[in-house]
Image (tube, rainbow over all chains, first blue to last red; front, side, top):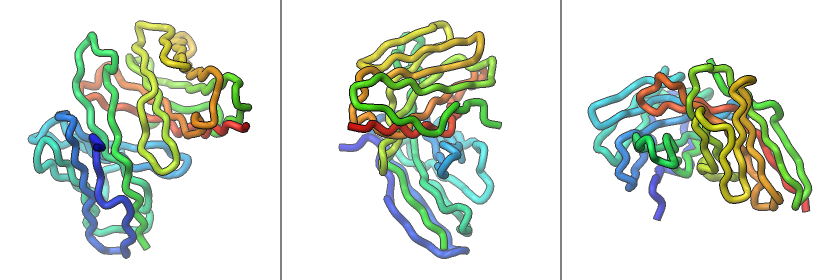
Length: 118
Length: 114
């Protein structure tokens, strides 16, 4: 079973529609992230959450909002979708780790949601 | 701005050869570096990481080299196989980051020819 799941996997919508992308994790991690991936631009951070009471903006938060409903769930919303939000969206989780951890800050990614805004 | 970048967007190698993927970074405060592999249609997967107090770290068929003097990171894949074909991302973390934020490069597409 996947540790980080995302729904839906694919979505086509129209300009102006409200869209919610959901992420769930079974890793028990406190930290969760939402990234956007565009061709040639790599991964860019939209929002991140330290724990259920903590939400922080990333590099490109305009036009997006998030909700951390529980430790295991982190949702990304596009209040009014526009075509330049067409992209691949990834959720990720991480654990603070310890100084002796071999994976000091590894982030575990979900399979992604391909969103197309027409 | 983006602190991590890649020298080449694509790399093609013959099966069995060694691959070297390079990455340059600009943030002197970066204290942790990580390589991810992303296969088509999938999310990035961890390959190997290295802390700034190390110059080299080896995994299974992979080696990461860190040269802090010139702010350069490389991923070496030994005996490259067709299954290694993917996009490879490097990422770094700022020492001052308390929330584990990683900054990703744009990625290098590795293609392995039989």
